[in-house]
Image (cartoon, rainbow, N blue to C red; front, side, top):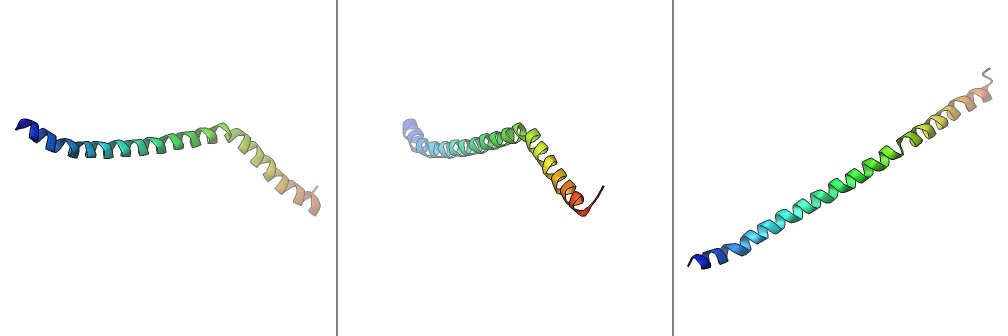
Length: 70
């Protein structure tokens, strides 16, 4: 009778474990994507800052030059 009790609760427990494993896999995939995105941003941060600085200087200096600022 002990075997019958363990057999009847076995599949129910496996379903719960399978659901937990799927949730863990989903969360792990989200963490991996976030980590990859943050790494990409950190790698291109200095280049992006330099490009932004050049664009902002061009947007300030060119109109000032055209207006006649000396």
